[in-house]
Image (cartoon, rainbow over all chains, first blue to last red; front, side, top):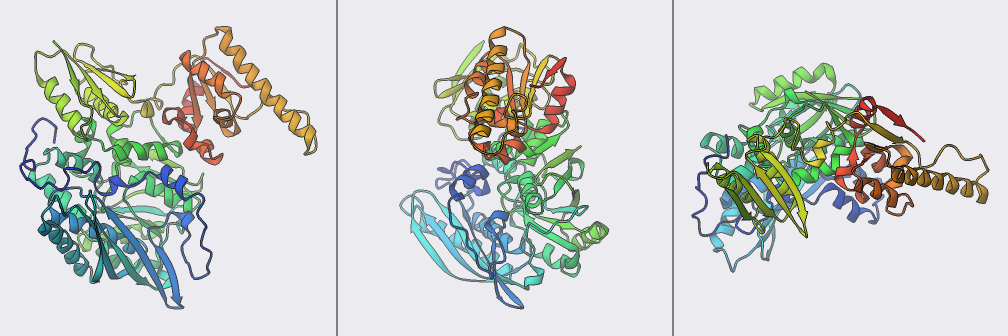
Length: 359
Length: 213
């Protein structure tokens, strides 16, 4: 794929959802350093029933209800990342549900959040967004039970989701052990791909790979690995902070260093070439700034490769820290249910949060 | 033919696409693009690199100017944006490596006024050391800061002035990111000055001489 032949296939629509959006999807997330600054002075909840700490960068909050049950709760929303309202709804819902799966839990109940410029856009667009989201929630086996809508100048949509898990099976960022293999699902490069989509540079195959990456629920991966759960020590999903940012959060929370092998990473079609030509989202530069101080790599690693390691993912895949002798079993179990996955590195004793990138 | 283009106000990826379109014109030899963010500069640098064109950028008031030239063929390592460039910029020269926020060791004293005084004196000496180097006219390639040495970059540190002075003279001033993080200074330092242990080692091994006060 190259930037030579733009196909202006999404420029004729009169109501383009992305027309007034600067950065869609998880690329709109506040940067890690900004977040750190605004959270610094907040009181930290201390309650024995709260199973997750805000310091460990968890995907969702977990609250113990009794000896057998914990409530897992998350909220996630973002501006449109493409013009098809139904697809946008689906992607935003998949992304919000993902935080529940990333804790090893199952979603049960969802509420929708919608900000919509109803003066500028026809209402059936809002209805389509909600429909896309609702269909995805029912695909996940959960119920959508209402929501809240506001009139505003920029569209925002997402979900607040509650799920449940046995407290012993809760997967956080902090459980990884030295030598654990890092297994990642889905392909990397959604941020670069979405920028190329906006520019009309994706061919049909690349588009369908991107859309399937964005709308694949992470439920199958969690189900497929449930029989191996004692050997899975930590889990998170790869979203706005990119692969490096999320591995770094896990490695900080687990007080370990990490090694990532670039050759094992799966990329979406054409993204390396697109990135090398300058189609890199602003949030990737923000991620580079936030995380690169704790990253080392050899100097001849191509710039487009490191750009993609910092590329913000929307509705990305899961990252698992798996006991080394069970990593092959995990990959097989995931392949059986048709999930793309690969072992992309491992954790080791080292400076917490430090990532060594190998070719 | 040289072409000027104003890309301010355009959202990503428009600036890259528009610039590419102009570069595709055979009669155009160079493009000067006015953009409003550093992200645009970095993306245009990648575009130039992928085509093997020369690339230069400069700040112009609140905006930035990117110059892409077809005649100056880019060497393999350039033009990398500052954030990535430092990974490979190590070359021989004199490198000053500072791994603590003082010059030598102060005379030991129990915690208290005397201890504070000794510490302040040692920091002041370090400041004088850097000022002397800056004024001496000696050729210095880089100043590398690690561990508590990164505290010299704290905007409140007395050494900030001389570090800025060295930077203006073309000396690279780089600090270990892990250390900045540890001392809570990461948000106060410019991205292009943040580096990692790998790059620090590269500089030290490539250096003609390393001075460590």
